[in-house]
Image 1 (cartoon, rainbow, N blue to C red):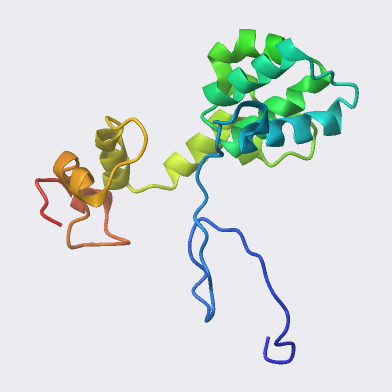
Image 2 (image 1 turned 45 degrees about the horizontal axis):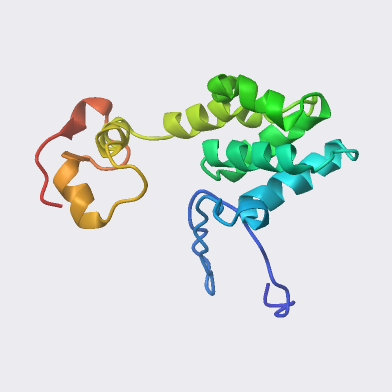
Length: 180
């Protein structure tokens, strides 16, 4: 990198890369407020039009798209998977089938990474990457609707790793009242 100091990199990862000059941008869900002008709706329409060029955006379709991105909580992967379905389903039909969104919203195409074939697969893969104590902590923190601050998290969650730390056997992980 020293030979090309003007090169700029954009890297996506679940963890920091740890190089000098690294700037981290944490991404959350897209804004759903603002109706048809929200980031979530814009993403849906952009991706839907890539697979369904004749998508008509009338009043009903606009309402359906807005409701759909609301139900998907503004999560970009969920929105992209949902928009891909407009090749064969209208937004209204996607909404009707949305009760099983974790399975319905699957990627189509034979080149899909198995982790991204459905919203359920993406969540399951991330869940499996967690240590047992982290899964327990998330289960406890699920009482919060939306975010929470550190103090609220400490009051609610009693899970922490034991002294074995990373690489410790699962037997050394435990949940206990933790003032961490």
